[in-house]
Length: 132
Ligand SMILES: [Zn+2]
Ligand SMILES: [Zn+2]
Image (cartoon, rainbow, N blue to C red; front, side, top):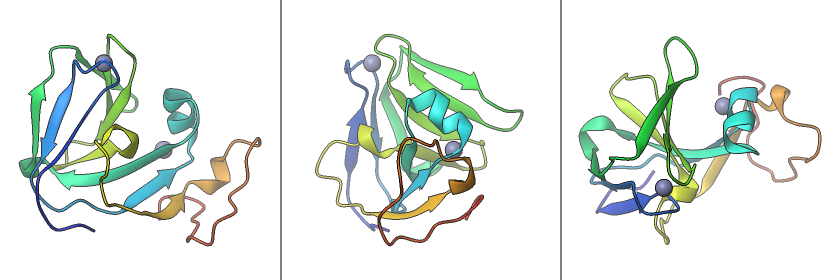
């Protein structure tokens, strides 16, 4: 968790830019099947309060409803995956879209029971079968 400051980020082509002005949760890696399919590997995301999150440019932002309660935000131009939210007052932001340095650390792995078979988890971070 980082208390601070202003953190910016955006998609690969630059059409989507956002700004965070509050605490950011440490990064969690999610290995569920939806994250595999949408990201091409697994997702690593921080999370911030919606009140600390501001979209500066978003005309190319599209939302895909990946379940009844959650949706995923991506750039329709370059295909970058940026956001996941349940509209519960917070938003998960995919860590690779943060401008560097972001100062965060990977803290744990979740949904490891759904992990794809082509890689192993070799770090010593906590691992949870489902949502940790
Ligand atoms: Zn883009
Ligand atoms: Zn996931």
